[in-house]
Image 1 (cartoon, rainbow, N blue to C red):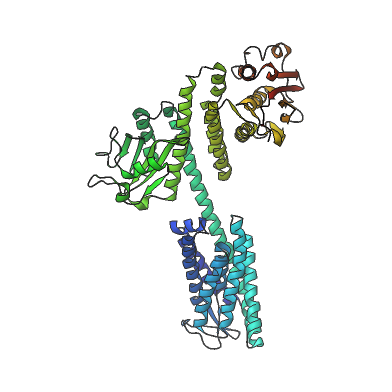
Image 2: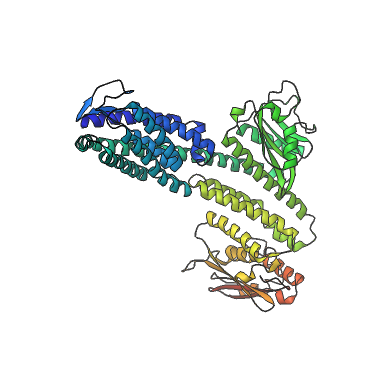
Length: 586
């Protein structure tokens, strides 16, 4: 038994090494990420069927209670059986690809095993198909949960599948005593080896997934770093000067033959291969760029014909072109060009898309910054000035730090940051927005703040759902919540923890909005003046509550003015009554 164990372990080790080698290829890594696609299924079937078939021909021949030394595994002796790691390959295929893949691999492997002959070969066809289906059921569950089985789960599954094979051998064998003798010889070595092999196999998959995540983390960190460096240029708008500075920053950081930025009709900057005929100032000539501008969607070219450069001997043979947008308007494009289509990987696509998304947001930010200078309402200018580059830089640095240990959380925060700035920079076009939109905006801000300062302030929302459709001036809740977070707890410790409560209730003809904190309170001399004139502040301009009050009174009337109650050492409560227009309550 010990000799059999060592021989099976040696053969299983070879299969695992072969698996690791193949799994490091780009095609199989992509197939592992997209397990449900047809193309991925084909690749996974080929690989696991190959593993299982190789296992059949690397088995150890057993006859009676003896190991038989033979090199001919194409046709086994009539009374011989085969101890191998076939069940390992089949069960792993099911655990990874689900029932259909497990069944297909089991079917092909079972047919090969029947053709090898030996003692009751049909038994192994039944066991192969059964193992594929049952392990596939576990795989289906993991696919629905969007995860892979853990190492311990994989080992346990392989153990159960091997025991299932032993049961099938005993039940279907024509000679029960021969079957029992075979099982006694092979059960422990095969269960142990295949269980260990499944655990190692799954640990390899988990390792490759972590490597992919780490690569994405580095790539995302690179995007954020470039975003930090490029932010000042977008304040100038999309022009030749800012575009040239941008491509000079981007080009050394990416694996591209050339990088270009255009507006909607002209090349603004170009650096890299083909610069003898692609250069700043010329009208857009490539067909694919025109297509991207027209569709507003990312385009990928895998050959020079798809790019549509009409210059003979152009060295560019592939490219990624991503639109730069302001909301739904396409302002220009960011282009990565390559010498070969093989140079375009999923990482290059993600990098181009990520940069374009952030650049689009920065462009919008820069355009709004320019528009702010033209606004006639001083209070709205002051409110929008709170959406400043300092918060943006701090948020990016926080997300970049989190990226090193929690990619999913960083991705979620990046989406929140995008949502926050999009709302901040577009709401100025609508003086009144729904309470639901305002709260969503505030919650995006709070999630970013929580990531920066975990547990510093707890904010609780108590909002009547009927109130969500009521319209109020934009930034109303944002100003009140941010004011509490910035001022109420500065140099102040609260035994029960710093807390802010946001409450909204529908009354007969108005929305009662209340924001309360348990902070240090407001000094009496400041309390009397805070809504009537700007107050000097250590942490800001001191105009937020004053401007908000002026807007509320200006849009509605004095009934909407801020009502402030505060006791030093106990906290502050700020209320406003927003008049309800007809039909606003849902």
